[in-house]
Length: 246
Image 1 (cartoon, helix red, strand yellow):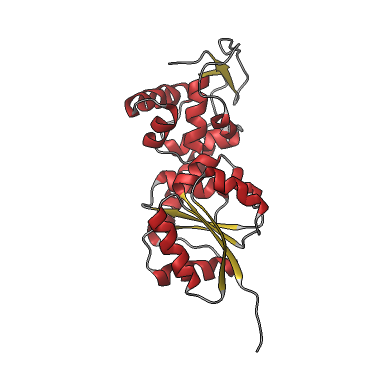
Image 2 (tube, rainbow, N blue to C red):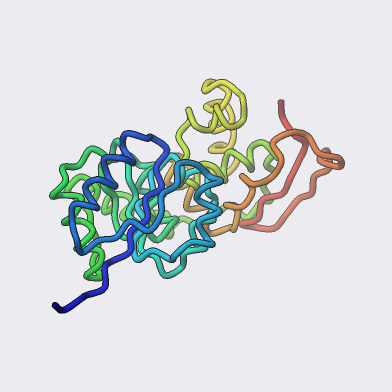
């Protein structure tokens, strides 16, 4: 009997039912091997000591909290799992360099087909995701023709954290939960940020954060820190830290 190597699949999903359903589907295919599972950030981060997967199925809730940690699996191809196709999810796909996005309620044959597609070094996007991605791309291209304001921009520590979380694909609800503030306060922060940066959408804000290297600010302590009351003016395209808002 000829033996062939199985494709190594890892599943990182917070919801137990969703994770169990996915692993059951994967184990029904003898050409696939589930090498590890993770249900939270700690499990996902500790997975670096486990076998490197060919494909990582990563749910959007965990992806929004990793802030680039998924890059530890540089050779793993990521398929993002989402309960709905939203702008935030498509931003996550772009940020992670994922190979596609898959509704977490997809039928078993769709799950297996998406994995085979990605294993063949192709991308998996349904019609809705593709349409949204094309629309976002057109929007970004239009922005490139509009130069950023030359005047310096000052964002507070809290605003920088919100910007980084938006770039990570977080929803207003997730931001409010992580920062222990109301969704109304999140919207207030976004209104101020949009006005300061001259942007009008979450996509534009995420693009600005990615191009200016602001995606790491979500890892900072969320409370006031010594010396955080200082501020400075910066040149075009940079953002500086001012006092912490409450």
